[in-house]
Image (tube, rainbow, N blue to C red; front, top):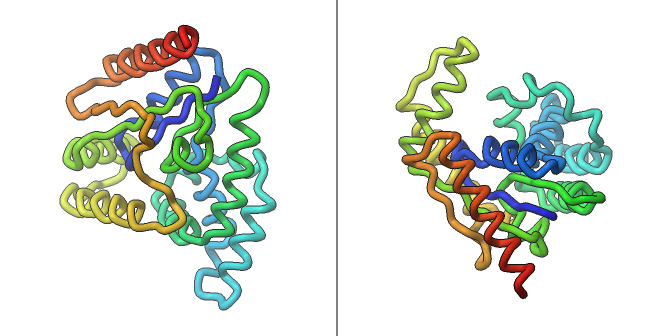
Length: 213
């Protein structure tokens, strides 16, 4: 079973994907970490004339060993460099193959990101598109950062989220939109457990529908 979980930053898709993977006993891949790993690999060459070539080479060389330092990969610096490499078409092509191989492992997997249901795994058994309003997403991200001891400017963070949404939607190589057969789940008013219960219900119903057909 392949479950695709898409949505904007801080919508809750990563938390839900982790919960779904645990619930169904599936492997889980946060695909955003791939772009963060590539971004960090070329961070010292962002102004170099061969930056794109270096990013493409780093993407093609990526393996699981590059995804072990979660603390660094989830930091603000990694996110900034990820946005620089994510717009490079050949980087995304290399990432797609990695993601597809992961998704089609024996038993299946849960993948979360921006273009899983539309580009990476259009054949996924279940597709969820997770949303929440910008204010709720800002507050969630702020609490995550504060839990790490960071001081947060909520006004600036709100606008960063809005700008990230705009970049994601405008990325010609991203495919960031709700797939026609994806189920929309708005987590604005939902806690973690309630959102996970709703997601599990969506997956169960989708699989039951497939069985009936």
